[in-house]
Structures are given as structure tokens and as C-alpha cells.
Length: 247
Ligand code: NAD
Image 1: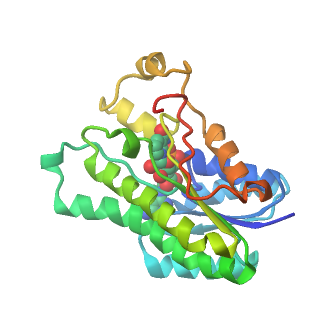
Image 2: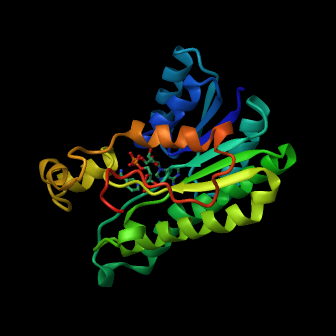
Image 3: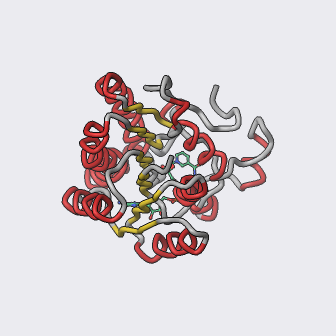
């Protein structure tokens, strides 16, 4: 069955692979990202492959823009049945150097951005009596990570929000799960490596229990399953996709 799926952060990294997986199985996909050029390029590739896909440039922390984008999705593709919230930002700053402004910005994008997107689409799922929500959190919120306390706190909030919504919407046919990724090779990992804020890729791989970095497709495969018909009895769960970094 073809569903309408929204993917945020679809202009880069795992959001690209998640969109590709939905398109490949025949879903109609709306790709949202603050980087309009990047997300349009990804969307065009999906269309070239025969998919029904649209792109929307939107900052997830801008509530009005999110609601306007979802209204466009409804008009062009139909009521939203699936959402994966992959949009996010990272930063590496010692706790005492985090300014109130950067704390607020981190929360605005990673946590409030998730809140905005979910509030915009849940009414469609309630009306249809079916929905699949996957939030992308972080294994750092399970393990703790130094110099990322604002990021880790925002992702901890995403995990808690996921559990709360799972309970609230379980009787309404909507499942809500979170994938806390660990060490997935995307620009978000390359940026801090190049800035000397993380060890080299070789060192990270040497520490990884499975002996390799995760790929965006590793995340997308788990997402596709959680958003399938068959996953209807799985809700409120943290499905770790981390190659054994955190058990
Ligand atoms: P990425 O940087 O490649 O992609 C993130 C995307 O989000 C980008 O396209 C960016 O433009 C978009 N984005 C950023 N701010 C936005 C905003 N305000 N509104 C809309 N879009 C915005 O990173 P990625 O690794 O693909 O990360 C995807 C998600 O996975 C993020 O939420 C990240 O925190 C999480 N994560 C990644 C890893 C990892 O190892 N890569 C680990 C844990 C968690």
C-alpha cells in the first residue's frame, strides 16, 4: 500500500536514505529540510527514479513554516500517515561555555522542532486511525557524551517525548518509536572529525564493536520496518542502531 511519508532533515545524511527507502517501496514522500537546494536535489533524484516526491524548504524550529509545509504536503500528496524526524544539529562545547542562546537554539531545532512537526501531522493520523512516527534521537542520550550536554539533553527530551506520545496514541492506531543512532557515517560525523573534535574515522572504527561505521541505510532499514504494517505491535521503543556501541 502506498502511504504518505514525511521525512525531515531529508537533504543530507540519514534523511536521504530514509526518503529513498520509502520511495523505493512506493510511498509518496515529502522531503523537508532547511537547506532548500540540497533537499530539492535529493527529491529530483527520487522523481527521476519514478517516485512521487516533493520537497519543502523549512526550518523545523519555525512553527508557522512547519504547519504551512505540512498543509502543502496534504494538498499535493494527501493526508500524512508516516513521519520520521531526522532534522537535527550538533555542537561540541564544554558545559560551562554553553551560552543560553546556544542552549535555546539546540532545544529549538532538536526538541521543539520535533514537537512542531509531530503536532502538525498527528491530526491526519488520528483522522485516518493509522500512523507511524519515528523520531531520530541519539545514543549519546543513553550513554552520555562529554562536551555535548545541550545536544544530549535535547535528544533525551526527544526520547521522553516519544514514550509519552506512544502511550497517548497507542489506542488510536499510531505507533511512536525512536531510533537513537550511534556512529553513522554522515556529514554530522565528518564535520567534528575534520575540526579535531572527534578522533579520526580510523580510530572510531577501531573502537566500534562491529568493526565499521554505520551507514545511513542501516538507519533507513530500521525506519522502514518500524513504519511498516507489520510493526503495529511495537511502540514506545528505543531501537538502537549503533553497531554495538551502546548495549
Ligand atoms: P546531517 O547533518 O547529515 O543531516 C541533518 C539534516 O538536518 C541536514 O540536511 C540539515 O540541513 C537538516 N537540518 C538542520 N537543522 C534544521 C532545521 N532547523 N530545520 C530543518 N532541517 C534542518 O546529519 P545526520 O547524521 O544525517 O543526522 C540525522 C539525525 O541523526 C540528527 O537528528 C542527528 O542528531 C541524529 N544522530 C546522528 C548520529 C550520527 O552518528 N550521524 C548519531 C546520533 C544521532
